[in-house]
Amino acid sequence: IASGVKDVALFGESVARLTADNHILMTKTTVGGEQDITLAAGDYRSIADYRNDIIVLQGASQFTIWKDGQLRDTIAATHLDWRKNKILLTNGYDIWRYDTSDQVTTLLDRTGSNPSIIRWHPSQSYIAEVVAGQIQIIELDNRGEKRHVIDIAPLAQGDFVFDPKGEKIFILTDQDFSQIQIQ
Image 1 (cartoon, helix red, strand yellow):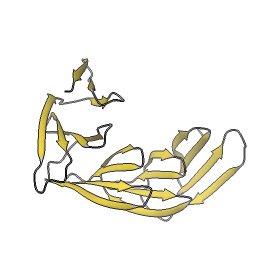
Image 2 (tube, one colour):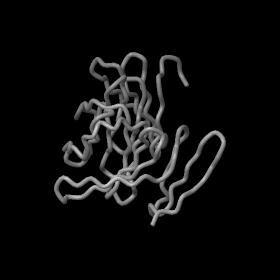
Image 3 (cartoon, helix red, strand yellow):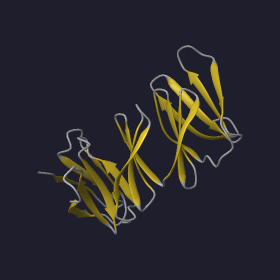
């Protein structure tokens, strides 16, 4: 990696590099040539995700979304998860859904639970989060003020992912690798 590069992300046959002087350098590995996107001043620490024509940059307490080489939105958040065209974001108090197709932000949860990890369930009908060392699943529905939270398993340290169908959770810690069947 060249000096002055903060982060690198790959998507298909494209490489995006975030430079120390706030540039995104886009390179197609098959065609060659380079596109240079000059970013507005900001505290960009890393490329949080990169898909097709959308780059999500992480700052100290916000995510910046660039689409087609232009700034689209800046959202105050500390964690994110991306599934299909929807980005799940949290600032520790609220959980938001950002739709990359129409650039609409929707509040999903405002409990102040301060999750350390958030994940989309593959169906996008549920959110999984880690709160106070416990994996919880929140059902998203339109039935008024009801909020259904299901405690799944303890997770003091480590990470978890869903299988593609959303039927299992795989938990990885320093000491263990386990799976939980969801019914």
